[in-house]
Amino acid sequence: MLFAALLFPAGFAGWAVGHYTSLGESSATVVHTVTIGSTSAPATTSAPTTTSAPTTTSAPTTTSGGTTKTSGGGGGSAAAGQAVFSANGCGSCHTFAPANSTGTIGPDLDKAPAQDAKADNNMELADFIEESIKDPDAYIAKGYSKGIMPTTFGNSLSSKQLHDLVAFIVSGSSSS
Image (cartoon, rainbow, N blue to C red; front, side, top):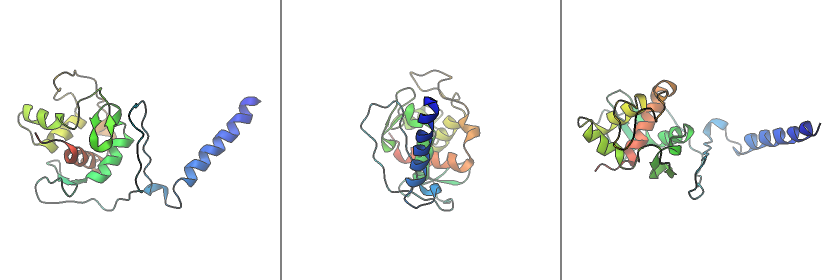
């Protein structure tokens, strides 16, 4: 009986928070970031973000505008990629300053992608990052071993999500 008496208020509180944190906006435009197991400073939140039709460019890879053209086709939005990064728990394993993440299980995304792309037959950075997400065991960064990163992201992310995530990582990765 005590369980039921506590369950109802908890369920109602969860429902109320979920419905009223959007401040009148559609729930599709609200981005919630949850950090699990982090000991870093509390995350800050920004205004809700909305996305429009996918941005495509015929120019080579650019990072200043937040759009990246990869050989896999289609451009990606770095802003939308940040939401994909957060929603899929990438920060739990990877350090990446633009996402305020400090994970240490996987390579540091601030530096490693550019260095590893050069070491992996001098691949283009965007292509290397996409390959590393879709087939993480194709190239193993120095100091790591196979099987650490889940191999499911190539199937669980849509093509748009993948390109957005690649654009986000490219936009924040050091090119040296």
